[in-house]
Image (cartoon, rainbow, N blue to C red):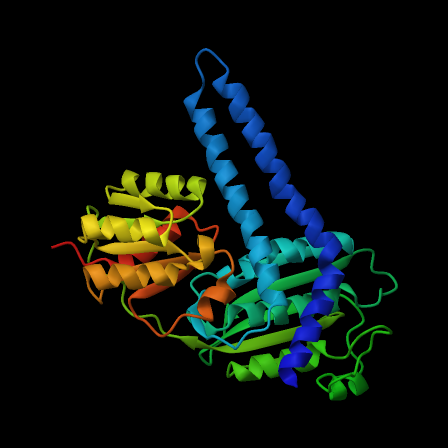
Length: 370
């Protein structure tokens, strides 16, 4: 029942945010078009300014990642899947939905600020579910009734390290706050102070936070408004790895999209890797028969004719050894994860993936430099 309620609440949140999100998604798409046109004009000059061209290309890449992040987070909110705890950077988890929060703030003519503490320890969370809780608290603050004498609605999202070994997320607004009667019932299912509210948001948020071993609480904001606090147990990070990976390693790259495959290969070769490419399981198998000596395989999850990256990884391990490291890349992470068994030599990444993130995953899987 709780899972079904969570799904209903997710769709309600997405529907309410649709206008703001559509506007926010248009921003990176417009920037991409403008930068691409600028590149075309620069290249048409007799002596193109390579520094300007490089800047424009980097901006295109950054805006593509930004648009992809917006779509990925929306898809994650909409999908129902088992809770999956992973060690996460809490500030990065909030940054991933920053654009959605800012878009909703503009829609409500509110001033939204972020105050994220540096040096926070990691937390073990299901990032999508905690993001849903934060978005629900943000929407409650933005929809709080106006207060006489307050010219602009304000909202603050902050993080800090609490003295008792917990990490805290706080969402504060300058609305009227909650009455003592509302505070007593705020986590009851179907109780709402909003005329058209479902009464599910806070109840589900409370359940989600408790499932993470944390606590969701309310305090009046000073001088006015509401302050909701999410407290989560912190994790102590282990020592950083001192070894370096072998930059001349041999990688098999399998992706049926020519542009993605060629661009990824260009990045990897630029780092000194020896890269062989294939567009399908058939091509990958042929490449492995010709030379099975590889150190890593990178495969897209969705290939043509019903093939998957998991099929490629299985074939590569039969040829090169069961302990071969593998990176599975997918634009739909839930589909990929639903078919992945526990495997400490496998990493799963979401498209679009930044080159530094991909290199970080490769570093985890390749043998250290001798």
